[in-house]
Image 1 (cartoon, helix red, strand yellow):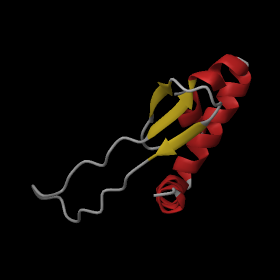
Image 2: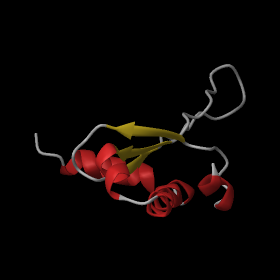
Image 3: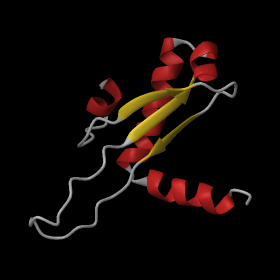
Image 4: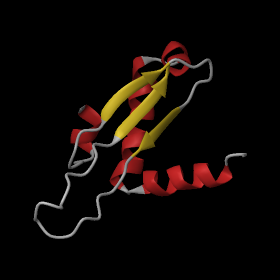
Amino acid sequence: RECARILDLDTVPELYVQSNPQANAFTLALRDDAKGGGAEAKAPARPIVVVTSALLDRCTDEEVMAIVGHECGHLKCEHSLYLTLGGWVAAPL
């Protein structure tokens, strides 16, 4: 919540911990492009920040806060949509 407050995010992202031996963090946000305010307009999906268990094990609280802040910065600048799509494109089949 602190990172979202500092960056003045419209929505506080959900925070998840993934059990993983690699230290990593990432964001996922999907935009809702529905126009108008009628019944067909859906609420946008809440953005997600994921940190791995290894990252939590290896970093101090201040370092984790900086990492989560970095990920929230991606949300603020709407980078997460492009990074997610880029990751899917770059993933081996």
